[in-house]
Length: 212
Picture 1 (cartoon, one colour):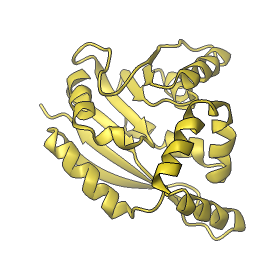
Picture 2 (cartoon, rainbow, N blue to C red):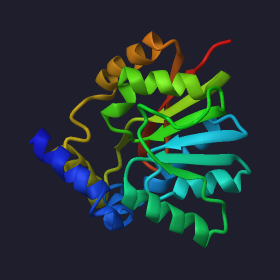
Picture 3 (spheres, rainbow, N blue to C red):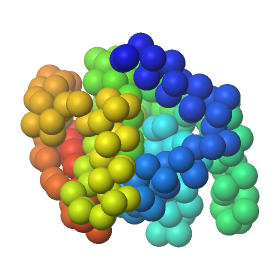
């Protein structure tokens, strides 16, 4: 099942990228963009790098807050969709196609790096080493690894069922923290974990700071 889900999500993020927004809205019962926006209050600017920006909606939100937003994503299709999203909103398109394990940016060039619902690449030691390199002293890494729906409506219960069968909630939050927190601490970060309530759902925020 895990291999099948990896196959599905790979194509969902690439060849089927055009369907990303409607499907994400469906499975989250309309909360997807709200979950991403939860990261904004933890960001420190002005220069923000978002890794895995998807269709670019958080890029728009960051520009609206006058952050100098940059983005990196390995999916050619997502880069194209995000460029269109930014262009429609008349914002600059500082987007790059690439991999988190080899960030094409100068050392100490960002105040915050953000990743919303990343895959396991985020705990790759090379990824964390690269994030550490591009962050300025006292810079922040903001990760949204998971969200959970607790509502009792039929739509919320259906969403929870779908998340379970696709393996998106097969790890309890504590187990997820037990993997991420040590990886971040081993990379040198100081780590705090927060839970943000959003319309009968909860979003986990992991805040990792690069100390002085």
